[in-house]
Length: 296
Image (cartoon, rainbow, N blue to C red; front, side, top):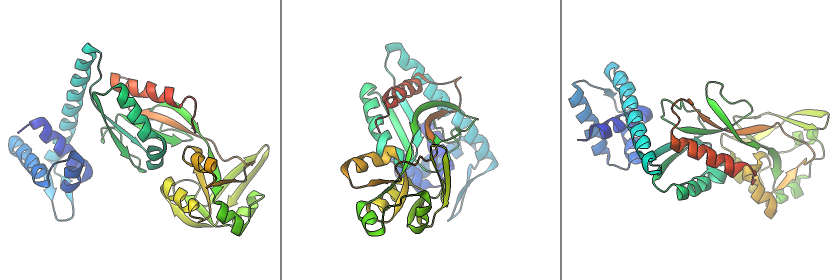
């Protein structure tokens, strides 16, 4: 069997801790995943994984094999990328991660347009709210929204990220329109579990306000809160890249429009400049060009 494919399968099993999840991700049967891992263990003469009904963990030999397999797969990708530059075409696969809301609102369409330019490339987009280890997950590029990006990573600014308070017309008609930040205390608020869950900070000129809101519904994902706001569930703190279409069609209205929420920014992050491939550079340049006009 193809040993490089076996290494890829093994790395995915080690990452996900699941044969079934690996089968789904690599579009193969669970039996084939099991066979690839068994073949790799037979080739190396060592057990790589400890399997129970509840978990899959690495043995000592598995830890060493995982590190070497990741190196081999990265080398294979580098060889493919370097070979592709001879005819001017970009080939291979890029692994990109971003939040679910940004994937839904902006990144999926951006990837489609990028692949139209470079049809021989493939992109695996991991939409996740968790903080992935880019090296362990073999992520080429992470799109992150933050006030301060991880200093251990190389960051390139893509665009500012403005947030606003929004609610549906039905909710505001029934519950009233807040006139001052302090009025938020009396409202049903929808908050992001990982950002400003209980305290919202606002500024108008030299005026500053911190409001401890009553969060009746919180979630770790912005599109869930967006749907709740559209359904009349309350006032939500939302990024404009997600809400602008709804503000334009009137399904949402801004709350306290004269007050500004803390600034954030959208960054493209990657582990190192030293081994940045031509394909990653092309994607970076494309995203900078695409978002320079801040369409949202």
